[in-house]
Length: 383
Image (cartoon, rainbow, N blue to C red; front, top):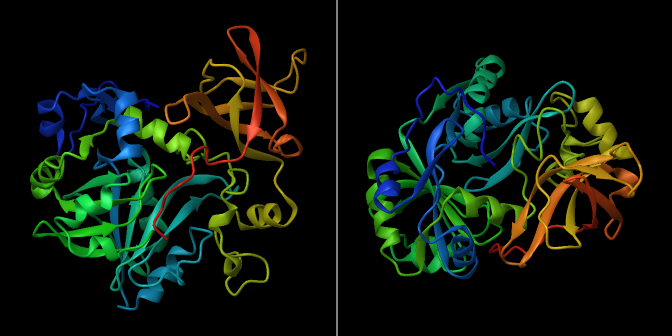
């Protein structure tokens, strides 16, 4: 789960760093930041608490960017962004957001991101390890039409779990009326915030973009609720794995297309062959061909038949005797909600069928797994 960094560079700190330390967070390097991997509660209990009640996550290391149309017409910014992503941005209504991917000329994924329509501008949330490159990418290709403004003075907090709505409703009157993927400016505990009903756990929940200087007071207020615990990166990773969600740099990267990554659901008809604005994004020829004809390989869910977790990088084989791997595990670990090991990886498309057997090599042994549908744990988004 941890990302490599240059050990000569000092670790950055989020606006909630002091809070993490004060609450006993075990701090580790992640994407160039000093982040809590867990608290005294431990990863297992943090995971299960989020599934049962509510967990508070610091995701301030993520990049937040405002994309403002120079013309004053939001459609111009939406059309410009469609030069870089295969999604329909024009159709994102005010107060809504959409999942998207920056693609390269070979159809690979440079990063995945969220795009929200705030009426006067687009609000983007990108991955921490990619945010500098993403900003440069936007400037290189969209500066003719848009002002690109990194929102460095903001923190980002995620409140996730079945009790997230009732907790947030105590400090934000609007929260209960929101539906999954609603997004926009809201007042939270008297603070002007950007609020979305989304997250990365498969649970109902919210992400709150808050001015950095107000982040600790807001987090402290939310944590004062007995239903809420602080949650570290360890449980964040196991929660998103159970939800079948990709981690950039692991399950998707510059060598995987959205179709190979089983993300074709995110590409609307308007951007496909015959659509109103088909193509026009980097790698369109390859991605559109895969949408029409299938991809040579696919991201799949995997369930080991034993109790041993299968980790990222483990090679996958068609049987117990073949010498050539047919794929690899990209994420793997223990699923606390299932009390069983789970994994994701890539297989040739003919074998990417639920129930198909496959074998992972672990310490010189071939362990049996079954291809399985995802998510491993049903999501509970409020539609």
